[in-house]
Every structure is written in C-alpha cells, then in structure tokens.
Length: 424
Image (tube, rainbow, N blue to C red; front, side):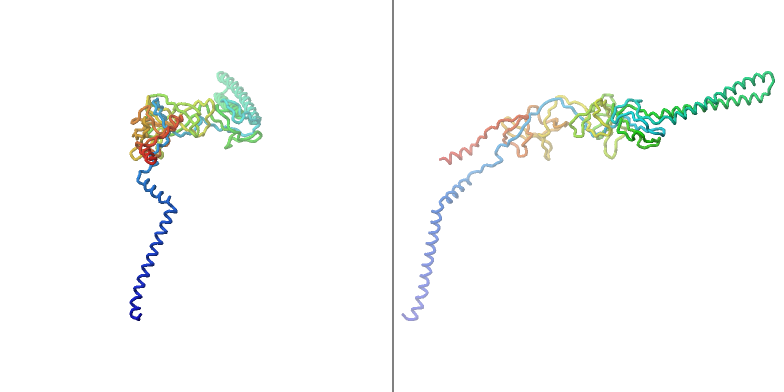
C-alpha cells in the first residue's frame, strides 16, 4: 500500500473506532440501569405509590375535633360590688405618758391586754407629792387662823367705831387686813388642790378603752413628764374604722344612696382578698377628690368584736352596691376578645363551634354578666378555645365541671372511599 493510500485509510479507521466505543458505552449504561431496577424494585413501587397518594387530598390535622371544656350559661341574681384598697385606722390612739417626774414603782398591766377606761396602768412614787400636799394644807390652816383672827378684830373695831372710841381709819385698815388674809386662804386652797392633782398624776390610768401595746419602759426607771416614748400606746379596736379609696367615676351611685340615708354594707377581706375578716357599714365620705390619683376617700366602721382587724392593717374592701335580678352569667374564662370586641365560642347541639358576639356587664370574682348575645342554658367553651374557628367540630371533654366520656371520631366519607379503593 502506498503512502498516499495509507493516509486515506487512517481517518476511516478512526471513525469506526469511535463508533465502536460509543456503542460499548451505551450498552454498559443500559445494563447498569437494568441492574439497579431489578435489584431495587420497591423504590419504583414506592415512587409510583407516592405519586398515586399525592394525587389524593391529604388529611389536615386542623380538621380533627378539638377537645374542649364547656359551661352552661346560668341565670341568677348577681350582686354588684365596688372594690377598693384600705387601711385599718383605730378610732382613737393614745400614748400614755407620765405627767410628773419620779420613780416608776409599779406596772399594773400586761402587754396586749384589753383595758377599760380608768384601769390602773402604773404608779410613780407618790411620797414627794404627799409631802407637798401636807405643806399646802398646813399653810392653808395657818392662813385660815390669821383670817379668823383678823375678822374678829374687824368686828370689835366696828363696835368701837360706833361708840366713837377709835378712828375710822383703824377700822378701814383692819378691813383691808381681813381681805388680804382671805386672799391668802384662797391661794392656799389652790396650792392644796394642785398638790392633790400632782399626787393623782402619780397613778397612770387608761384614758380610753382599748388594747395595750408593748411596754416602753420598765419598773424602777425614773420617768419624766417630757418623755417622748411614754409608757404604752393604747389603741381602740372596738369599734374600728377602715379608710379606703374608690375611683371618682364609681362613687356617684354611692353618694346617691348616702344622700338618701340608705345603709351601705362594707366587707373587709385580707391582703389576698380571699378570707373575710369583718362586716360593717359606711361611716363617712370625704369632701374632696384627690386630684393626683382621681380617687375619693371613704370611711367604714366595723364592730370588730373578734379583734380580727388591727390598726394600720392593709385590707381589701368590697362595698355592696346593688343586686341585678335574673341576669345571664358565665365564667370569665369563656370571654374572648379581638379587634371587634368581646365574643364567646358557642357550642351547638351537633358539637359545632359558632362565634357569638356579646355585650359584657358587671364582673364579680370569676363570673361575668352577659347583657346581650347569650341566653341561659346555652353552652360556651371555657377551655381549649385557642385552636377553634367558626364551624369547627369539637370533642367535649368536660361539661360544667364534670368529665364527659370521649365519643369515637367517625372517619369522613372520603377517607372511607379511599380505603375501599386501596382494598380493591
């Protein structure tokens, strides 16, 4: 073969070689695809099944009935109260202080004791005051004797003046002497009374009835009339008052009843507002509103026979305003709010949710008056309403505080059709 022919055959051979190589690669690819297909036939089946399932509508979890607790709206008389924060204030508080100086020789009361007016509390050494009384009484006797003698002389001078035995000047002078002694006797009497008063101050007695506080000084100490702490503080607790405040927009009805001389009942509760401490009556209303807080002060009085209230104690006040007759009420837990206002989730007899717009009234504790939008014996959701919507189905777990047996959830018709198709 010549060199020229050799160059013509070389491209032809290259073309045949490339075609052969391409054919081998194609056969290898087809073989590998077949191998994996037959080795993993389930993957293809699963993909086919998945495609078939995707062609059907999926089951939405929100379509499942939500478990809820419901309550039946009731109809009853609803008491309306005004609530405020108050401080217990004693009608009278007295700090018993000594009025004379001396040694405290006796303590006659116990701390926390209920005292009556005039009960002996303590005694200061009375001997110095007894001596002062004796001196005043002695001076009184002396001046009374001088007065009596001067009066006798004055009578003799008058007799002699009538007989023209002495001058009129002597009679006048003697008359002045009598008046001087009379003045001295009156001053002596005052000194005697003062000494008796100082002696009485040596006995410290209760100026009011009430409960004694803690003793501020012990027996044996020297006390003074200007001691700041005093001996003891007595607080009148029976009766006792409470000063409390109410917002200015809440007091008009109270003022109206007050003007009509209608009694207003007031109840005092503890700091948590749970335990009732005492019941009383409204005693007084302040004459001005506090401009900084917008509140008006009121005072109520309590008998406090069981001593449940203490001075400066913090209490919660509930004042009975009126009683609404035969109104619809539900628990406050049933009330929902949105941009349009208040509403409840109403449960129909077929356990379907219905949104019902309502108008709220007074609130007391965990109960709310429904003015409009809800009737008695209708049922509303009080728990489990966070996922509810209009027309949703519910599963009632509890009604009026009583557990309800769970009802089986019936599958939807489309789900049953799907089952028959899969079985076929």
